[in-house]
Length: 416
Image (cartoon, rainbow, N blue to C red; front, side, top):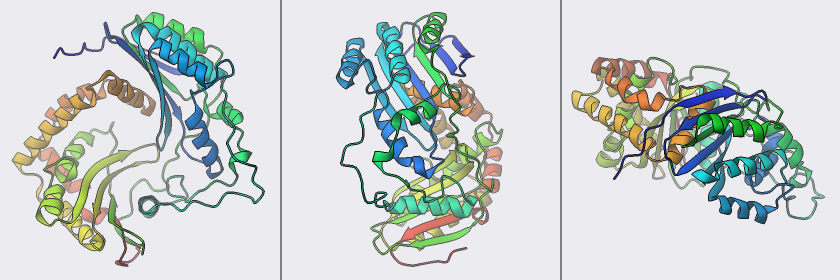
């Protein structure tokens, strides 16, 4: 297998309309990748319906091209358009043959500047708002976990729901608010000369104006999680769920790498302590994971477990015990060596394709991180000693500083 060419020069500038534009050169790349990242947090419950409808329709039709014409034009360019919605962002992705990049930019501009949306199907509602959807067990646990750990009100913890109906939605008005350049990031990865690509972007998107939209997550009321034990009871639950919220530091912090390695020892890979303890030794969990979560609201260390009904209390006990042991004694030299290799290898897999690389770089740009963070991460890992990992474990994995939340069919535990 021939190695993919390494990325070349990166050109980054903020256009007069506020669009943060990044052009990454990959010599002789057969495909070009475009990523448009828009702030899209659900900060207002009344906007839930319109946000869902706009995300489903963005990039599918315009005033000058209907759905079929857009699809035909994209096919002729060798392009694929898709959208993804996260807790914070709406990402519009385009993969296109290298020679079709200029056409893809023209089509993208047409869809951004002159959109068209299908009106929601169905007869007008005469009975008021639609019935309120009941959130599933994981959503209820997630909201309770974050509410008890970080407080509220906050978009990630409030049980918000639409106050209107689909017939009340004005998609074009919301498009003018949300799909705006000020606050957005446009990343283009391809083999063409970056100055020519930037000139094409300027030409196609010069008329695109507006923003910022305000659809960004505010910080949590409390920066540090409040520890304790929270147990939710759901008679209809068919699984036991566990989520924790512990202290953590975000990527720019110098201590993040050591914490990431300590978290990986705890539950971030196939032979982690939690995997061996909960799945292999006790057979308690179907799925076990640990990760550092980071967004505009805050940063926290999370353990996520799924087990059989009735195991919620036992899962909580075993997770706390595993965290306490690692915090007290640190990892073994073998564990430290293993997670270094795993973390360094993961950075390669994360950039295995140009599509993945473009998405990662766009995410870095949108979150304020250095674009070369992931490629430099193996060097950062090499600088972390076993002592640094042990110190991070002692500081961040102490169960006395962690909220442990479960949802199970059997009522157990008490609210803090």
